[in-house]
Picture (spheres, rainbow, N blue to C red):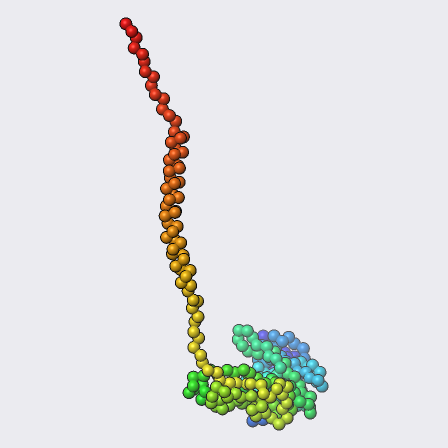
Length: 265
């Protein structure tokens, strides 16, 4: 297929996209998307996207698919990334990714541009680390009551994940609460600090309950069966006799031959 015009220029630009992933910053280069069908754009290896925010109008953009996959793997939806290439750099969160149902490749991406100087509210996943003595030595069951925590925090302080060290769970009475977490100084949580995140419960063997058998009912049933047998036999005998009697009554009587009188000579 021959590619020409603005789409051709976009295609050349896509191959120059790069993602910079450092310890505290992840950036991704994007380009303004003008015209052209999304499917035609995907055939070039690019992914159509959109960015928007409280102070940012909805703007169609495009990015290189392979580079985005690397960034998404590192950042997920809970890490701020810097979009470069459209005006000034913009801090944003990946809010939605549409994947192809068969190939699993990204087909469209939504970016939420953060307003400068404002906190963001994000659900950050927990990262459970360590080994619990209550599980390893006592045979307990690890129960994860929560898997993520919603926090309000400045973008620069937003963590990729929140570590939870379960090695502190040594007995069945030990629990890790929200107040036990190490959160950024600017982070605020909306739920009570004494909410349980993870704990260990004792493994109990489930005993299957067998319904009790009423012996009295069994004996009554047997006795009743014994009494019923003769009565049943008698009833059957009477029924047979009645049938035979009816049969005899219904049978026509045979006419006896008349005796002939001898003539006197």
